[in-house]
Every structure is written in structure tokens, then in C-alpha cells.
Image (cartoon, rainbow, N blue to C red; front, side, top):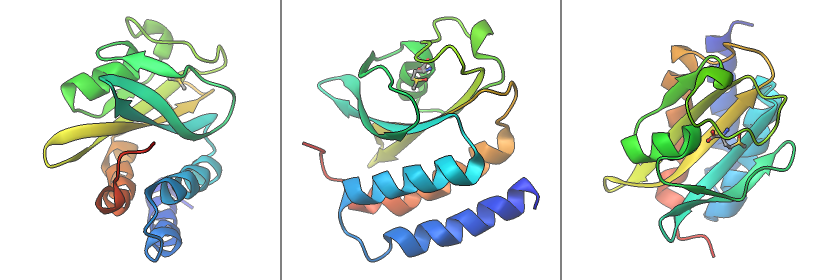
Length: 154
Ligand code: SME
């Protein structure tokens, strides 16, 4: 299956998983598992904006850094710029935060409500150049399923 067909299939599964579930955290946790397994990522997870920092949310994969300051690493920059960042080789990204030495490429997608970024979705791979414009196109659609359920996570 090509990646576009895979994304279409995963989007259908994602909609079915979360459409009748009002709880934001439960929905985020399941989307994380779906994307992790479905895309074969090394690490898949959410960070949420709290007290002007990114704080770790539901994730799949090895343990990760708990807090990330605005502008730091790929996640902090995606948040600051409110822009998806595709990093083909994390070792050449200035300020990259190496939570796991096995990670070689990454995509970070910020998500917003009413113009305000309230979190990011971070996908990491052990392969170089694992993510592309294709991922940047489809991943926000998973976040659109989640955004209406957003409530500040305790
Ligand atoms: N590499 C990320 C940090 C988060 S972890 O990879 C899970 C970054 O540079 O923002």
C-alpha cells in the first residue's frame, strides 16, 4: 500500500476510534497508538502547552524528555513558529533535543484552537528522511479530529 492510501485508511480508523468519545486525553492516547503502529514510527507522542512550556502527554516508544521550552528543539520551534517542521536528519538540526540516540528523522505538527497553539504532535523515526510533505499534509487531519475535544489536561 502506498503512503497516501495508508493515511486514508488510518484516517478512517482514527475517525471511528474518536468520533463517539468526548474525552480529549483518551482520544489523544488512542490516536497516538494508531499512528505509532500504523506508520511504524520509533516514537510518537503529544506535548501540551502548560505554563508556557511543552509538557509530555500520551506517547508510544522509549521514555522522552518531560518538558521543552518555547523555541527549543524541533518541538519548541514548531510551537514558536506555529508551523509543521519536517526534519530529514535531526543531527543537522541546530538545537535538536536528542531524547533517544536512535532517532534520525522527525516531524512535528503543532495544533491550535482559536489561533492559539495548545500542543504538538511529534513523530520520530530511526530512518533518515522518513517523513515528507505527504505526512505534513495528512497529520493535521488527525489533529482536526481532536481539537474540538480539547480541554486543558490536568
Ligand atoms: N527531538 C525532539 C524532542 C522530543 S523527542 O524526540 C521525543 C525535539 O528536538 O524537539
